[in-house]
Image 1 (cartoon, rainbow over the protein chains, first blue to last red):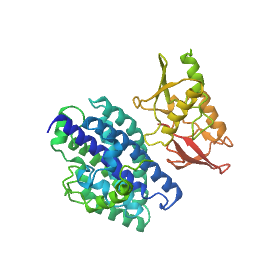
Image 2 (image 1 turned 90 degrees about the vertical axis):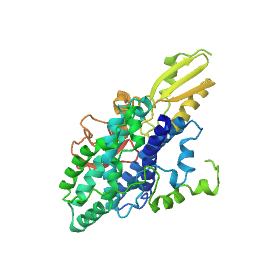
Image 3 (image 1 turned 120 degrees about the horizontal axis):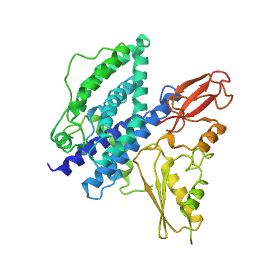
Image 4 (image 1 turned 60 degrees about the vertical axis):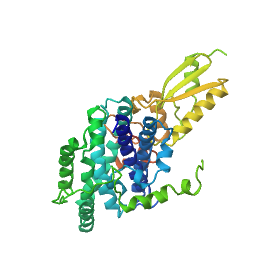
Length: 253
Length: 152
């Protein structure tokens, strides 16, 4: 694999994570339990979609085949997506959505802090901008996980169920492979495994405060960020997200 | 026509922010540089939040304002680094925000006082408000909700 091929893959991973999670979060618009949460979710989704434009815009530039961020978002099918499986998991109830958000945000903020010092100044620029937004995301998702985990018996039960369900999807964020090896070698991005200890420590602290118990298994589903095998949920999501371009190819606003 | 960079800055200071029209795009600190290259006016703009829907409207408004002044060749350059910070808000902008009912950003991370009654007894409702750049707060004395322009 050449450097540019790995760089393109890496940028798709960044952009597809924010795109898929951003779309998932936007599904709450108009449905959240209270107005303030509805607005907060919509704001988070907006930040993530904005970051997607920068990551996928740069991916298209690096690829050099004239594909725009919109082309990459709207004209690829499930097997070309490089997001982690965690991002594409369905919203479930509000607690499940917030647990997914926290597990992701905590890794996202650690990664962006490192990327702000990337040897590629375009990557560093995007990360330095995004990390400011993501600092607010993780503050909120962490507070919400603690509030609901250490809340009523019903909210506690739901948050523990959400953690049990989503835990096996968290590990994929920290696996290394050929792409990440090339990126680390170039000083563009850290090996994902190097972020694990800091993430574990932060998540352990949050779950303790939330009176939740982390499952005693390191089993991790894989296949999202390599595109080898996405869960069935991604295809369903893409039919919603891409339907207009599928029904009216080339349609413009 | 002959224009100076200062003149262009003055014109841009009359272009209102589309979502908070009491402050200009210059007050907001998103106009980073104005360059004259022959007949071409180049304006470097740094977006506030990545997904802020006002960004493309702002670029359009800047272009329109300069064309209305007779500048034919306008180039808007989006500059993301260094990232926008609320430290770039002008003093004029900060006081206009407050007059408008939006508490200006504070290093402490929360509003100094209620922009309606001036009380210091304020409480956060949500870190996310009506636009990406604002948080939602409430005064516990006059009981009015208000927006706080959050630090970033």
